[in-house]
Length: 261
Ligand SMILES: NC(=O)c1ccc[n+]([C@@H]2O[C@H](COP(=O)([O-])OP(=O)(O)OC[C@H]3O[C@@H](n4cnc5c(N)ncnc54)[C@H](OP(=O)(O)O)[C@@H]3O)[C@@H](O)[C@H]2O)c1
Image (tube, rainbow, N blue to C red):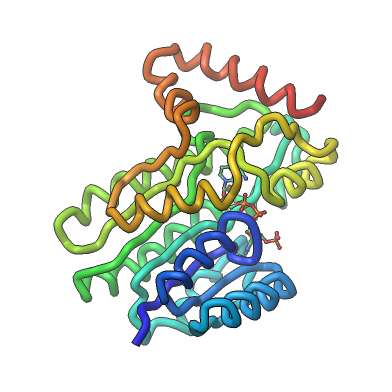
């Protein structure tokens, strides 16, 4: 019998790439996303290419009770890999952005991710094995003016994941957190639509989703805790250790302001 993996935000971008990597390693998949058409397309594509079993669940993970609703469908099965990947961006001054989007973002990035991790982690610990990957961002390492809630929510994911990675050491279960820089997906379009600004700056896209997913997947399978793909991104992740936080925040403000142009 194949092993089983659960991926959120699997209908496009990074989640789709993770799903293909898992399928290539003969994992059966439970794919969750808001986008039902996208999910059906991915199911069809992956099943016909890799010959593994794919189940899809259409769910808004930005709503209360979303993690429990997924768990109600899967609790009897052994989940070998959980990838909490679903996420979106919102650009603009905090005083002007839409609360409804921020509330959804906080549910998605913080509450649903945490709850799903707790539910799956307990059964992984009972089985003495499992891999969890939470998708954070390079945004996690410092405050981010003009994307304040996004940066703060990704900082939560980094801190939470590092802490529980430490707690589960030696159990056979590992927790990995991906803190990637920019790569081109629907993320830029969604962020722009959410903010009523033009499409975000293409110059910032230095990697493809496929490349980021491969690096992160390898790190997760090796049981590493934090993965920051790309040399420049690793330097960026280290900068807050040497540059005063206030200065770092001003630097990020300048970078973020360029997204409007
Ligand atoms: N792209 C980057 O530059 C970048 C950099 C660092 C970190 N990340 C992180 O990488 C992760 C994946 O993003 P991506 O770049 O692959 O973007 P993407 O192509 O937009 O993929 C995100 C997926 O998550 C789904 N999703 C969004 N809100 C959801 C919700 N409430 N419930 C269920 N599914 C939801 C989206 O569905 P819909 O299409 O229906 O909205 C989409 O399929 C995110 O956590 C993002 O923060 C991205």
